[in-house]
Image (cartoon, rainbow over all chains, first blue to last red; front, side, top):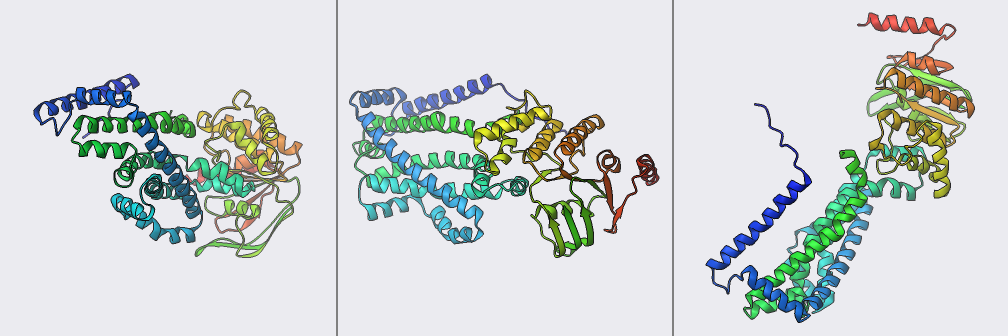
Length: 261
Length: 224
């Protein structure tokens, strides 16, 4: 039987369907809020009102800034360390073997366990939350970087050796662009994980930030505010993905688009 | 310029070269012909120094080497001009100077207007021209070419061989050109050695190139 090849869709069509998907979520949300107790689910309208209230009282902006700062610092530390150790392990098999148990522990440990340990070791505040985000982000970045280094085209490396590329040039011109794709994929994944980690950290080990405000609203049974914070988190994720990650990815992998084109 | 004495090279248990003697003089353009898998590329790798013989001696007077591979091996994330500039930077030239010198090489190989193109935007022949320009830009004393024009049509092959010959003669570069196509080697080389399936080297008599070509063609047709 002949396989059917899906026909390509235009950019406009993709946007229209994505918008329909978003509308679908809001409609289902509205229907559920109408058939369940308001204490369990706030309606979209009640959520928007709560959001407006938070924005007017400036709580939204102050908490958002606190969370964003913890997120960005933790993400940067975790991503840079994961990248640096990944490069080292990718180039040195002995270092790879040495880091293997550490990677395994880092990837296996549940986030909530790490959050509790961070609270135990560092107390409440910025420290444990940033530490948790960095710790959770690092293994994924490390694994993607190692995979990227090992997949660098050996024919290009041979070309570099024949033309006597100094080590620094070989790294900057062959390895670094060669690992851009897996590293960007790792960074995208890490950012999603980091948002979850920062909220978890703030729920358990902080007295400020979106996670703490969310937890506080929940303890006062203020369901519209709980939902408002969820919307803020989604907006934060969208800001990071569409405002930073995608433009960065487009920039570093421009040549791949040409190849596909 | 290049001397092989009793060279033996194996990969695991496979003997690729055995008791190989070869001498290539300065400014010579030497073709090495032979069927696939007899060790032609291994000879080039031994000359570059990225591979070492198991026994015997390989002497290369000057390791300033340019290499044109079977496939262009350009950095896909760099433009044509930057692909040439990068080998100049490897020699210690500054970024701006390297780009400028690379620009003149782009023109030399007839790629005016394509300096800012990425390899994915170039045809196979154009990419190979960039690869030739990169090899010459490195100011090599020895240019190694590993079946650089295979899978190309005759017209394109002819024009690239022309470019190559002109620059090699002008710069007095020693060229070792590996191919399995004798006709191609006859077009370019001063001297041709054949690496036989039994891994023996045989110097071809090129007094009558036309006859050598016809003999090779008739023996190739006879095998059909």
